[in-house]
Picture (cartoon, one colour):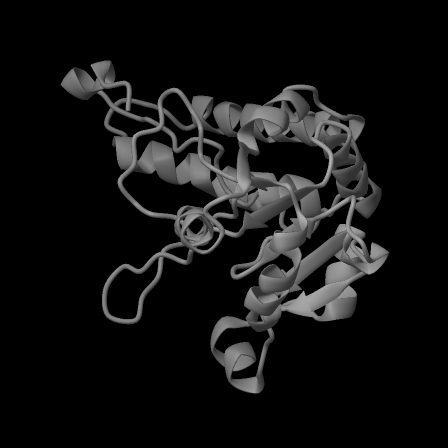
Length: 246
């Protein structure tokens, strides 16, 4: 939802549940997705890395979440790195989160600017025994695009080759398959919006209407109800295209 935010206690609870699944003296590092280019100075709509969003609620590029429950200094146990904004960025790209807003959104008390992230890693990773890193592990995922997490994994293997690396996907899959009450509420709302979209189409479809018009009606209803978009893009086809699955 464009204006509906989940209480930060949800994200804090997710982080606490993740900590219970980690090995002793482990550090977790999750990067945001990239802003992908189109042509000239254009970019694609931004889609956040879902594990990062699940753990922080921050939907902003150049964000990094670091969890180190057994850190020597308690202040290092949770750190959220966010992009430092400027007047120029605000004019061209809009507002970015301040440190105070990032804390209010995520429940993470320690917020640092993302340009300081490398120096923190040089200090913290050598102290940890296990390093949990994020990969996109899905049975049907086929991609050749290298993500920020992929690049960070390669960097870690070069700089810290003797550490014990762990797949963050394993505990995250366990956590995310069990929905919390806040998630169930959002799923119900998404279902209501989807139903409204179908009902709008049922009242619109008639002989001579094109697939593009049906799609436009569907998009209109989702946008009207303040949805940020589709979980999956609608597949609307007639004739031979009616047999296409994707």
